[in-house]
Image (tube, rainbow, N blue to C red; front, side, top):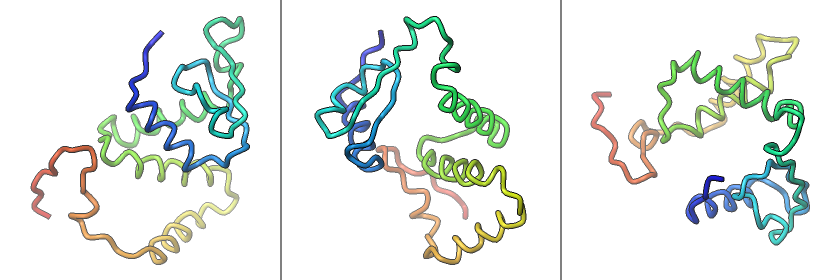
Length: 142
């Protein structure tokens, strides 16, 4: 079993607190990093994948489908050249596309994208490439 560092566990707890409403049911696999969710006000349902006759994709089909689509999109669209610093933006774009994948009005994607771009204040390039994980940004000629 892989061990989880305290820093990773802390980041995970912080992420869960910011994105999931207390009292919600959080359904996870048996990974140790999810321990302690009950003490933070969540109902925690665990499905241990390793000791189950069914495959992981049968036990948690939607999770595995989305993870598979995300991996395929990252490898296809970005050719695997994904930086950790911009991972949030890649995930935002994937979510935008995923949530509109069955839209009957495909042209509305562009309309909604432009609508969002107009609603958000512009961001200078230097601020856009700010690295939060301790590495210094490279000097770009833009």
